[in-house]
Amino acid sequence: MKNLILILFLTAICYGGGGQILDANDNPYYIASPYDGNEIANLQYVQSADVMYFVDGTDPVYKLSRTSHADWTIAEVNFTRGPFKAENITATTIEPNATTGTITLNASSATMWNANHIGALWQITHTIGANSVEGSFVGTATGNSASLTVLLDQYFDFSTHSAAPNWTGTIILQKSYDSGTTWKDVIPVHYENDGNIQYSEKEIVKDAIYRVHMESHTSGTCNYSLIARSFDVHGVVKITAFTDANTVTATVINTLGDTNATTYWAEGAWSIDEGFPQAIAFYEERLCFAA
Image 1 (tube, rainbow, N blue to C red):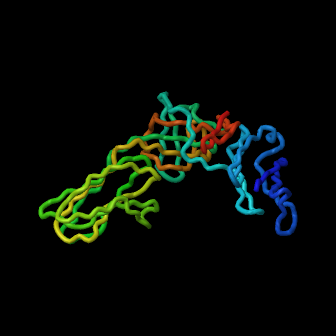
Image 2: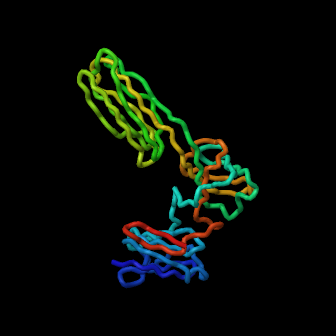
Image 3: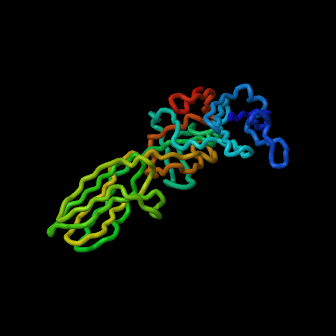
């Protein structure tokens, strides 16, 4: 069934199944629209099943979703990792006062920000050094190592090595995406009378914490090492308030790597200041935008 929408200034009248949709009281079903009469002519949209995406060049990207016959919602699409303009090549620095939560950003240039940057994403990059967790399970000891944070796209290395006498047991590398509430096995291995692993990989889902878990340990000493390699942390913030050209308030979307001033930053490509997409299309199952 095709589902169509007719935009009438600030109200959207929903149609489906060849006629206007009615609510439980047989009244026309309406939802609020973010567009006014001056923007209707510029609206472009694409549809995939029960979801439609809208652009008009002056507003953020919106998504209309139908979850049932008389249950429709329209909301701004929540982009979290871009898109961004080219990385800064000037001497201007940005200094955050914290790496998570609601933070203040201070710029070294007096022409950095204006009120039209509210709502814009900003990418701030810091390089962090390698971190590691190392230890041993001795005799019949079981349990867990300390945890180690591994960020999205960061490489890590896991290895074991023995010390006399040779060890027997099952050792498991585990990860958690909910701060340790639940754990998922990454690579479980069992060795009889020694045997060791060297494993390297990249975290590809999202920021996680990792640990080494030993069970069924019957003898020997197993030494382990878990290393998160040095990494460029591409933190992302969303500007929420404008103080002056040097200072804004922001909410951290993706954890920042440090609070040092850095020249490695990139402005969000879409904002009131920069404008928003004017054209939209699906291409090879990807949603594409242009201006």
